[in-house]
Image 1 (cartoon, rainbow, N blue to C red):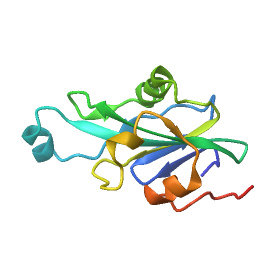
Image 2: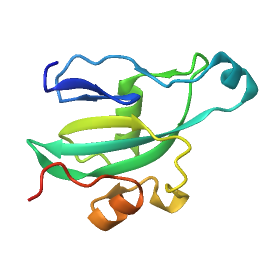
Image 3: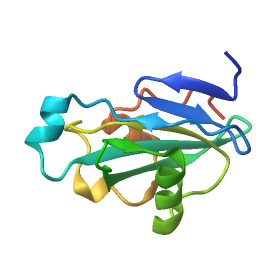
Length: 126
């Protein structure tokens, strides 16, 4: 797979200018029918040529067909003022117990906090 466009768990990574593909939140029809309001939590990791720029974690309400477009997720990060640019990896982290409300809707760059939240640490150390 090309390095600038690869799947990661239930998310997708891409760099600026790459062809955007649909981001599908994995939910069964039974789960969809059971919930009137479905909210997904996303973890966006930003880097610029391997230099870590931070992580943004936030919630989004899913559309009727339980699919969110990458553009919608990235646009939400811009609206919240927590998108530093660069390449983005997006993961659905809905239901992770370590992610508390106080960790959402901000750009996180503290390594210790990221590990506390479930990160395995930076792939590239600087």
